[in-house]
Length: 77
Image 1: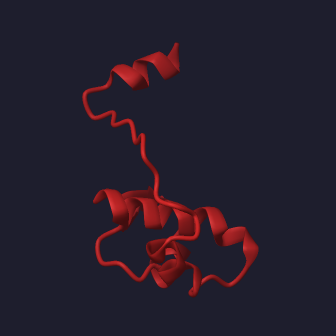
Image 2: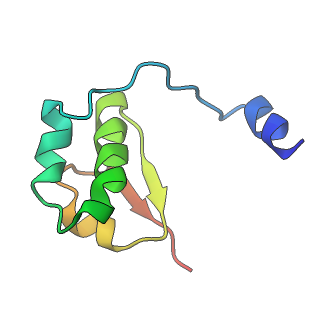
Image 3: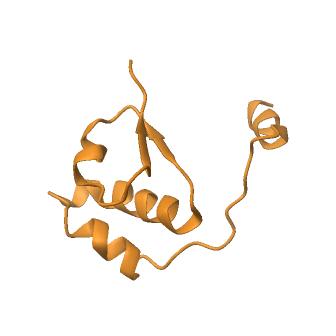
C-alpha cells in the first residue's frame, strides 16, 4: 500500500529513459570513485545530472566526488 501512495504523490516522477552506464556523464563521475562500492552512487549522480534532478542522500561523501554543481543534496541527521 505504501508504494501505491508514493506513486500517487504529486511529486512522483517516473524516469523512463536512463543514460548509458558507460556514457560521458557517468565516466566524468566514475573517475572520482575510490572503489567499486561507489558505482551505484556514480550512476545515480550521472542520472540526476542528465535529467536535471537532485540526488538527495544522507551520505556526505557523495558531495566530495560529484563533479556537478547542485546535483547532490545532503540531508542532516
